[in-house]
Length: 192
Image 1 (cartoon, rainbow, N blue to C red):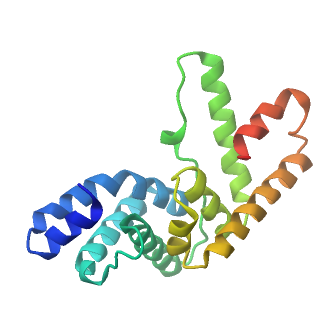
Image 2: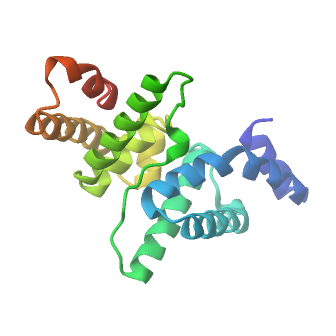
C-alpha cells in the first residue's frame, strides 16, 4: 500500500494503519540518525520522537513532497534539537550494519577498510556535505527529497553533493590513497 493511502486511512480514523509506516521507515530512519547521533540510546529515542511527532502532525502533511522526505526532515530536526540540547558536536560514526559482510576473509577485510576509511573521510567534511552524501548514496533519496530533509533548495543539495565529492577526492589525494593498487578503494568511496 502506498504511503499516501496509509496516511488517508490514518486520518480517516484507522490509527492502527500508522504501524505500517513505522515498520516501513524504522530501519532507514535509525540508520540515518545513527550517522548524526552515534549512540543507540540517542538514536532510538530520537527515532521514536520523530515517529510520534509525524503521527501527531499527520494532518499537516502535504502530498506535495514524499512522506519519507517529510519524515526524514522531522527526524533530522529532532536530532539537531537533541544535539543542541546536549551541547555536543555531531559525530558521524560508522554503521557496521551497512558493511556487506562477504564470506571470504579478504572481502570482509576490504569492506571493513573501506567503511573505516569512509567514516574517517566523512568526519573531515562539513556536516551539510556529509549528510547530503549519506542521504544520496546510502539512503538513496532523490535530490528533491534531500532538499526537504535538509530544508534547502534542490540547487543547494546538488552543490553540497558536488562539493562534498570534490572535498572527498582532495582529502583522499592528500592522503595518497589514489595510488594504483588502492584506486578501487577510492572509486568505491566516491561515487562517479
